[in-house]
Image 1: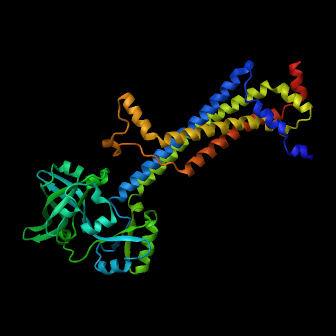
Image 2 (image 1 turned 120 degrees about the horizontal axis):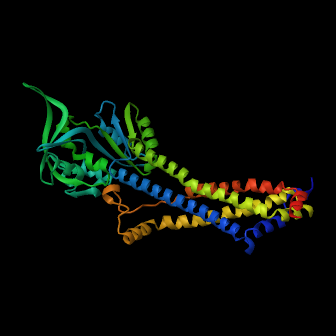
Image 3 (image 1 turned 30 degrees about the horizontal axis):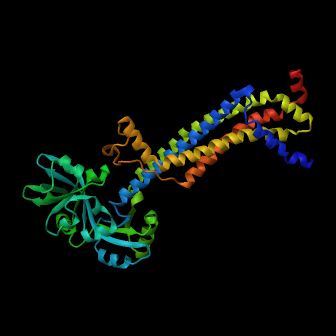
Length: 422
């Protein structure tokens, strides 16, 4: 086999690029080529913008969750940790450990007048809580300092307070499942607390279902003596909290229940990943439609250029070189469309807040309602991996769309093509 048949001649690339420029006699082919480029660019741009917004929403959600919960928890297997002070001492200063805070956690019910609501009761030590979370930044009215031992004060989620019809300074009755034995039978344990502040995280799960009280008050309510439910840990790298808390527990010996923020809220992030996958597939159909346009464009070009193909073959052009001509033409459409789509997508993603704000002002509507989505503007996080995956997928679809028309051109017989032109 000759060297010429192995390496397509340079003229094949030159002719393929020249065919991209439509002649006056056939502007329709050029128009279809432009539509194909625009379709690929639009699909790529929308994919980048949508996935960037979803990545930004995921990061925002993660930040909100980590602002309320700790990176990881270490609990006793029976719901009590008696030697928590020794465990805290042994784990303080471990590599990656930033802060440790004891806590008591349980389910209860709040009663105010004729209203009641189930709630998650979390008891904290104010000074330690500031070190493991940013919850103190989401409080209105009284802060964590309002929680004092023996003061029986409580901080409620603002949605929960609205549901109960209480405000700062009002009292609520805290009822837990543990009972007191009385002559009349077993009665649930209860204690009246004063509302000292409101929690406003921006997530319904916490604004509706969380109540904070002081660690000492919870010990008396739950009759836990000097014990706690467990220890909350903050690590330097919250993304690896699961692995770090596991290694820490193994180093302590004994039996513990461990958990981290990604396990407790796995459904949130799993739903986002599923939605991202669905959106990727659906929006990729736009690129696929544009790829079909490339097929239609090249089929028409091949039909129009049959005499040219026959002449090239009679002059010594190989099927491989003819194939290259039309692959270059179709691939150029895909490359230009993808490049334009990436540039447009990055431009939209980096300016999505201004774009949405302009649309809202122009149309007089609210696209992002904070009362519904708990965000006032669309966050965006452009990840290079997503951009690369989108660009490569679009290029593969664009190049794959050229193969059939290019094969048809390469299989054209010179004598047959010229006979039809006579």
